[in-house]
Amino acid sequence: MKFIQKEHSDTLEVKKSKFITHICPYNEFKSMMDRLKSKHPKGRHFVYAYRYLNNFDQIVENSSDDGEPKGTSGKPSLKVIQGNELINSAVIIIRYFGGTKLGTGGLVRAYSDAVNDVLEMSEFTPYVKLSSKKIKVVYSDLSKLEYWSLKSNVDCNERDFVADGVEIVLKATLEDLVTLK
Image (cartoon, rainbow, N blue to C red):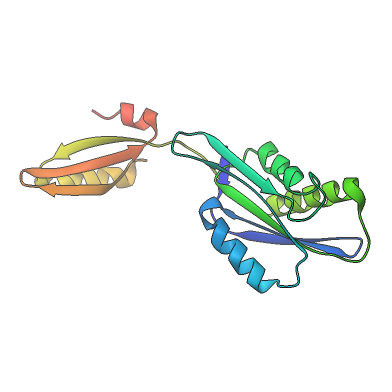
């Protein structure tokens, strides 16, 4: 699985209809939708699809046809991001109607192509599930731990200073945490 870290966009034209596609991290989806609706007030349809991992590591996904014939835009867009194994990502496609009806098959192809085009130009990061482990160190060992974490794949930014030391939450892959003693 992989995810996107920054927004990308691309435009596809099919029989004078313009499909402007934006992809972003899922946590920016609502703000991006609001921004695009104010930026494109004459956009006819705002079709979207997204997938994200919830707190139980389950994939949650949704899509909307936004007035297009049922199943011709949102579902095909979702299928493309499913096929590319994307998570924590969202796509929004703005359609400006060009005067020529595309038919159901034409709409499915156009929306699928629009999402594929924006995916081709986007950069993705592989998803790695992080585990956490809480440890306690004395104050004098804190700088050694910070130096070690910079050289390794372990995040130690969560700290709680207590009377007799520092409680730190280490975050890393399960394999990296198992190697810690």
